[in-house]
Length: 405
Image (cartoon, rainbow, N blue to C red):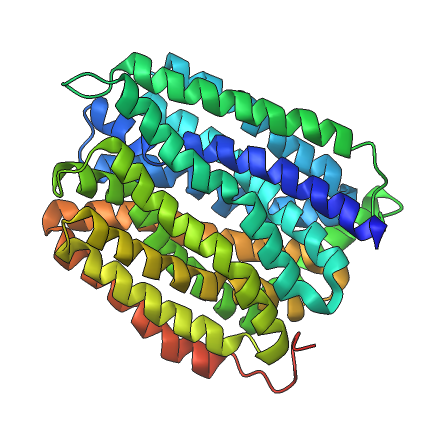
């Protein structure tokens, strides 16, 4: 038991500081920084989404690579990007450089994300839903703190005309220090022993790398289930990019309140995911995913109808519940479908589709908002979530128990 809890606790601690660093650099600081640099809605959405595009290209190879060379080595590469990239924002004075740095910064979560999930899947056994949910909840506490802290830094230091370039630099410095802390803790974690079976040579390693990818992506259940979280994460990405802009420019809220709206949504997700994960282990995952998609679609579509801070907070709370329903079950269901030796590849495939949704969210929302308004843009995206539900029900037929204990 100690062997399981010790690396699990270490992973959670590293993940906390890594996610805190990334959240500080993302919402609400990033969209407001892009706005400060003169970007319009399409450009703001692209700046927020471009770092997630990185994951589309690198999460699957990173997960598969961790099956071959080791989880900890691969995680360290990702954590180097967490530690170094926030400091590069200090040199940004135009939008184009912001986009370039965001793309490179995306390597942090692209590499670290699927590998850390694979480690948890390695040790979770039949409790994949519960342990993956606990891990996710503990580590994204950094997301919960990062959003309001970033908003507070901007609001407390800014003048009547809004945040200055120095205010944004302060936020990114704090982000960099958190990333360095994650790296330092990970170096201590690397002293431990690897918990997976390594390949015995270059030829064998390459064969395992390619065969794992082929086996995982050929399973339509994995692809469809991953797409459900990808679509749900599309709305998450849209909220990250445009909830702060909507709150400040339409609802008339301040930057700190904008950060709190995002923070409360993350808090609800954190608190409810372990419960939902345990429920999915016991009673099944499919119904929870369906319920979560519907709840996310409704709450997301309601947001542009509201301008009151407290009503917006209620909508964010319901969205957080919906996200917990989906995310507590989808990753575990993907792991249920895969052989243990391919957990890294499975989580990489899942993470790739996840990031396609996350990247598409702010980009699609930016394009829609520029042509319509917040109401019709959000309703169109909500409709996509609702349409996906019958596709999932028909396409993922679970004949046997898949993680129900």
